[in-house]
Amino acid sequence: MARIHFLTGNEGKLVEAVHHLGPLGHEVVHLSVDGIIEPQADDLETIARSKLEQARAHLPNPDDWLMVEDAGLFVEALDGFPGVYSSYALSTLGNHGLLRLLEHLQSEDLHVEAGLRRAEFKAVAALMTPEGVFIGEGSCLGRIAPAVDGEGGFGFDPVFIPRDLDLAGEPADIGVQGEVSTHGRTFAAVDMDLKGKFSHRTRALADLLTQLGTAE
Ligand code: ITT
Image 1 (cartoon, protein in one colour):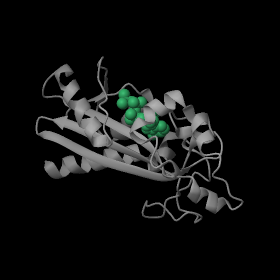
Image 2: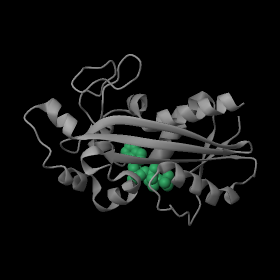
Image 3: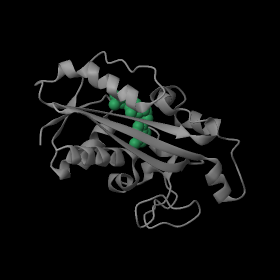
Image 4: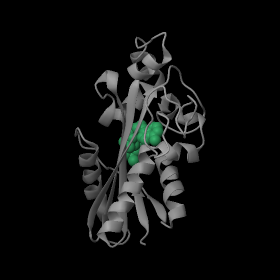
């Protein structure tokens, strides 16, 4: 297995990728390239492919593998915002600003409120190898918390509560206690191993490895 150069400016994403891929025998090293431009596009894959193209010339060895991973938080009541604008929204609005945008979504019934605040993290992991480009996708259903919760994680983790998972690892229905649960806490309030059981990133990376396996 080749060394994977992960192009990212986000340390939280790097730590999670190493945490997931390291035990599977993949060496992940950080690649930092100045001047990468994120194109304006309405899907994560287009952004990821563009970044691969821009960074390929900066690989130490042209046969090395290059990976990028693009993620976003899509809030249903905001028609998918911030979505592909998540980085910008986090640095301008922040988590408190996002909560303010959703202040009107309240209900006496907690299950109804969970439905009103539905959101989804999505990730696309793109890997360039000498054999071509492989794309993995992952998503994580959940909801926006009523308030910031937890000190860990990064980005939108303090306001995102994942939907419980059933035995098969699929999201349980809202209001149904699943086999895997954060018990109403956000990603920032649980450890990385538990976040990894739900996370869009883990799922995108796992999908990517499946694609690689079938291509070999
Ligand atoms: P790159 O340099 O890798 O592009 P980025 O911070 O711009 O790093 P993304 O575009 O993939 O990362 O992510 C968009 C935003 O969503 C960004 O602010 C992240 O912090 C946030 N985000 C991504 N994955 C997240 C996760 O698992 N938990 C919380 N926030 C996340």
